[in-house]
Image (cartoon, protein in one colour):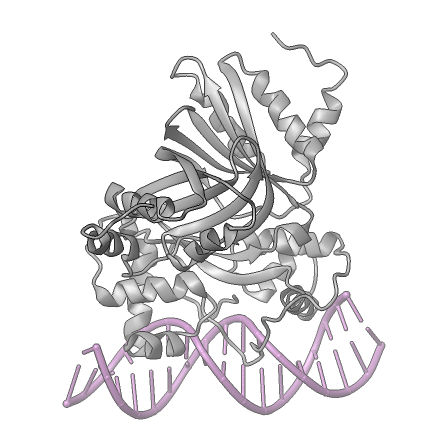
Length: 184
Length: 184
DNA sequence: CTTGAAAGCTCTGTAAG
DNA sequence: CTTACAGAGCTTTCAAG
């Protein structure tokens, strides 16, 4: 996790999006799994030298492919054992700004607009059901909010950041099983 | 993001869960926002010396509070622009093992069991709608799966890892506004 | 892209207050 | 907890092939 050296003046917006090759994808995959890797180790894993891999990682950062490196916190043990997904139905379509203001709350981790029988989808991690109640109160205070449906998480079996990789499991699987797909 | 020094043989399971104080919380908050911080910088931010903060971070790692440090990848630009939440209704309650096997797929990022009008909630990020089709096909191949509802994400306005911090915004807010809560 | 080498910063541990 | 010192390691950069 720690930093080293002195070149750390990156963190910009994507200047141009050049296509990434196989090396870049492998680098992204390794770094997405563990960012606390030395460039020497990373290079040996992807089959490149340390200077080369360093150059690529620097470019991946400046081009925005890598948005940052963060520490993964264990939710339950850090005082926020209460996880919930909240579906929000709202009237009108322009009053979403109010919802976006919820991003200020540290308890709100995700805000998406979705297609389906609801408009917005929120992911909230907080300390207690009382905090969720507070969020709902804030939601219903918005005139455009018509209804909400909350899905309180009972158990989390898997939760991980986006997996980078060349493994297109689902697409290939589906294509392969298309011929002999027999549903019981 | 690179590593340094030599002490990197951590990554165990929580031996004991000691309560974390204000310093620990501030450290977790900083590291959750940016894990590529030097211990010197981190110490100055939380008001501790470098050796002290290093000792605390090491303890937070071994106790499982910090599960790891990963690179945040920009989903859309890394070839997986298709994000969806899938609700799964299943009959019976013991056949969830089949669903847990989905964790093998890199496209599946989250698996929760929830309370509400559905049993399981999946978060899936893949390359195309075809890949989502593949997942649904695999779901419906399970005898216990009764129905699914998919919520395809149109726009993501916020998506970030768990925020550690002392800011209990929602609870305090709700408690404060309880007296003069007037809904329009 | 590679190897090799020099320089710099950080980490890591030890010691003492 | 703090400051201070010293050893080790990795990064970072430059050179040349």
